[in-house]
Image (tube, rainbow, N blue to C red; front, side, top):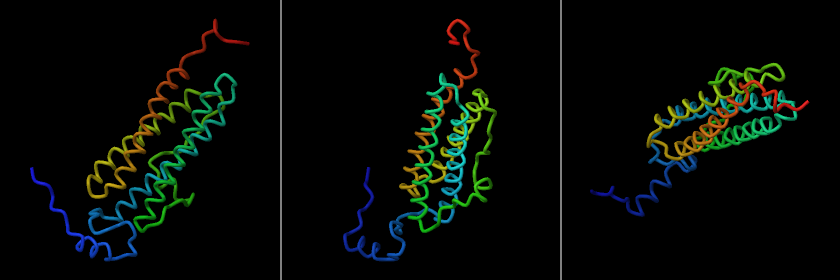
Length: 189
């Protein structure tokens, strides 16, 4: 097996000096940067909508016995906001602007914001699980599409995918708890 030929130091320096305004994007990045920025903005909008939905749903969980669920949903909202910030940073590194305009979020997002009546744990956990699964699928497709063309963006998406899969797994467990009717022998007045 042969290794790829390593460019000489002089050649690397010459390539690095070319288009200094491009920052971290060098000629070895083979991705179509406009398309990657569009994809990342779609994911950013989806994470912003997801974070708002998690936050709204956490507010609706008021029963003291369900406090762990509310805390989990607040944590999911925080992680989604952090993921959106990371995407925004990467979009900037690629020479584009992150799209945070609230008027455009619904059009860009793969998720639809939905809220429920206070106490409808099954509805809100189901919606959050569906949203997490949509993002898992979207991130998987994005990772495959990027391939080796933009390894930095791909690794970022892989980390977000790992987090979303963990969220979906926890929401699946919460869904089972939320959809079970309360056991009258263990309920407290």
